[in-house]
Length: 462
Image (tube, rainbow, N blue to C red; front, side, top):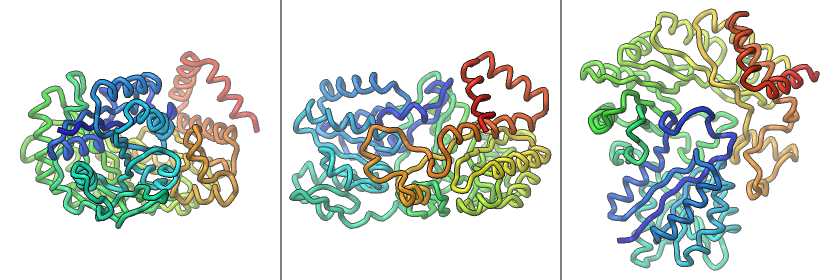
């Protein structure tokens, strides 16, 4: 039986959640799905997710696993935010075992497949969704068969990069086995993660996930989702919360309504959380979600500037947001979180003030929290990356360096972006009243006095 070592390497420090344990964090459903299909195909597979691990410790562990487990294949999930550690693994893997076959996949690997094949000793890259492709590829390699007819792969032949015919997306998501949750659920973990759909039909200027999903939205059936939830609650007695990891869970409101009605009908007891778009929304949907046990919804608003909302192609407006918040007025048991970002092309002191003022209006309609404020990161195959290249601030060679995922600094320096983030953060704290503002400021001061002083310096620099 051939042995497979499936891994995702350590993320950059900026992407690791601080003050939260692995048992409280979400886990890699991508690895879980791949593990399930590979195991079902009859392989001996060991899977490790090192995303939240210390880089040096994880590299030592990977070396030990390759030596002791002696895998025939090393499979790696490569994202832009873990590419640096992934490169280090690629440089050492074949030194540890010369005949190991290296196959990689993931968003960054798909986008930059030519660059990676030309610079690293990689046997194959799986492009896009990998569940079907990886099994066909492994079986062909086991039988020493020609791989040129396998859809959705890239490799080198006679020194040239070859890309085969594009693989179709998985249309019927119900046909996939459930991800191997047991890889990640420990006795201390209370939250399980599920994915009920794939793809997003929108084209936000900063998102590269369309590289995999082609902006095609596909949904699992309600019956299939309920079956997975009941499996989780039956087999992992410590689980009492389910995080729905979809980017756009509420995109199909009728499906959400049907899902909630079935949860209520079966009297399934769990706490649900999800991310959602500002629209579509309805009073009926939110009321059913509340009755079904949803306790939190996160909305990706990003900015409160009318102009920036249009320029980043969020396909939402201030009016849409106010309308959704009005429908949430009577929904008391669900907490609302907004995900905010700054540093978009065209960001300015004025757009920051507009965002703060808009959030004040929203808070009067319906209270919410803000999950930090991200500075715009730049990923390949996005509109903002193309703008950075046009301005001469970056080129494709950047992705071969050991530098972290870059911020959009084509218009503002990083120091200016930090200053704007401090201004927005203080403005949001002030929305909740003077007492909260003072308490929050005092908390920051005592927790990290040096950092607090630096933030004030950034704020008043201009």
